[in-house]
Length: 166
Length: 240
Image (cartoon, rainbow over all chains, first blue to last red; front, side, top):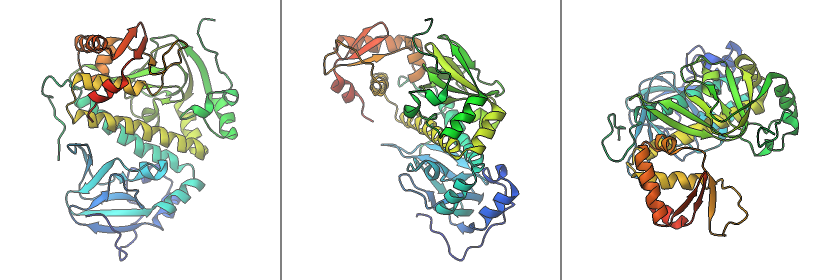
């Protein structure tokens, strides 16, 4: 089930902490808040789909989501993200399609920001890039940590900490 | 000349700029960069930063290559990736303020421009094209890491992993004058131990698999120059 924006949703207050907003000035947070929409989505909702360009930046306010990678044979789970995590940033700023799937594992309250609004604001306020870089750095740190934890990559024996598959 | 490359002190005159992931910036940004960077030349084996060290800043690799290695949860050294010219090293640490995630060691004589953390953060916040380049670099690094994770989940054999690595290196072949048209030459600056750290196996296994590749006529190894003789055979080994 793919995520669709509920048009009856309400804007989220700009004071909410998430990994992007905590890097921004109150004025910028307020500006972003004007275009925010918040909604509650059920378990199983796909917030980000691999290969599908996201229309919105998605911020998880409450609930738990699973981030997984599609492989030829399996879908290794990368992480269970919790409130405050921002998704869709990589695709939004680089124009590349998402490589991961993000699925709600329980009902989640989320906030969305339309892509065009975010990119416009980014163009006029380059200081947002610091927040963007922080979000992307966290993703990279998680990916590198997975590589560290699964470094016993020889095919000759079992891994001590196998990658979870879903 | 101690090093086999010309030292580039002026970013505005750098001829490699357009091919680089980070440096193809606006004139204004390049002028600013000139004022905040410190150019240094490093010999092979120089450590630019150490895993766990507090971040001091970033290094823009101008020429040469560097390996990014880390310590696994089992205490073994593993290579995360090899950085090419134009990459910014130490980026996640400088942006997040957390310690350097990896040890960066030059694989050959290299030039790098150092930018102090505070200067770099200001630079990133001031120029949209710098922000965009940083975002693209982080996206690229993340993509590389995801590719690695994908191959972890697939239990590839060592010959397959090694074939995959060689084919990836073949995307940037060196130009050799006496090369046959169907051959691809590579300059491999990693030792067999480092290759083993790259693909998660032992040096002995790398040595054995390489010997098999040579015996079967897939590859010719002469010092640091490896020549792919049978590309199709290597591609057949790669199933994923």
